[in-house]
Length: 125
Image: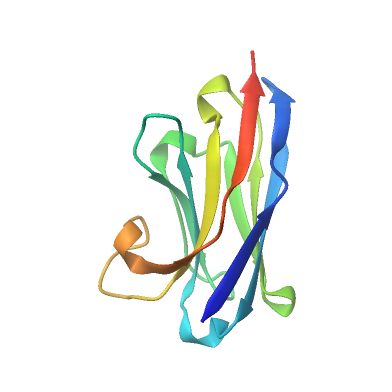
């Protein structure tokens, strides 16, 4: 099993920044990397960004490119999501997930077998 714990969410004004962290523990060696998804009220959970352990491969959704940056610290089994120039439409619960399947691509929820509880990001205008 793999456990994931997100932190760093909060309430910020538009134009501000946040850094979300995801600490992974357990059998992380059975996974291929981690991704971030977000879910706004009444909407589907959508892919945001992903990174392989070691950082050799990354993927970021077109809708957030230029504002979101993903990074990993293998020594600490931590994946971070830096969010700059936050906008009200970024308001959502952000979830960290560990990729357990190579059948699906990084942006597919089906690629991830482990999920964190989520952290709330609220952006005021």
